[in-house]
Image (cartoon, rainbow, N blue to C red; front, side, top):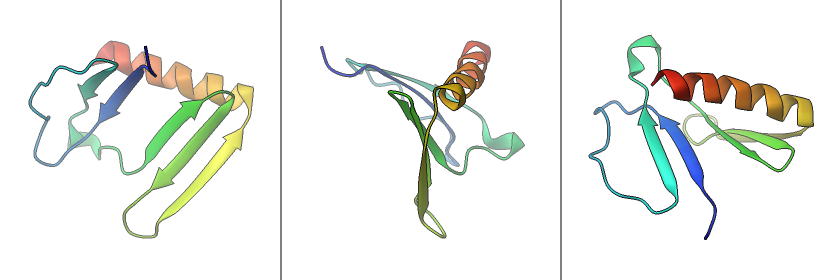
Length: 81
């Protein structure tokens, strides 16, 4: 079965061509409002923030409350795209 993922992304060249994926769904967020400049990964009761450009960094917050807040924001944005 694998791990199911949902991804919201920005890209300067526009959205990727649609390609079928077994365990993931992607939605494109136009970068007209600045786009997304770092990645956020939510798993278990952890939320990881990281950036792989410029000053590379990462931080993991272990908190059920932070996880729930980030998932609420993600789900609201997902529903609007």
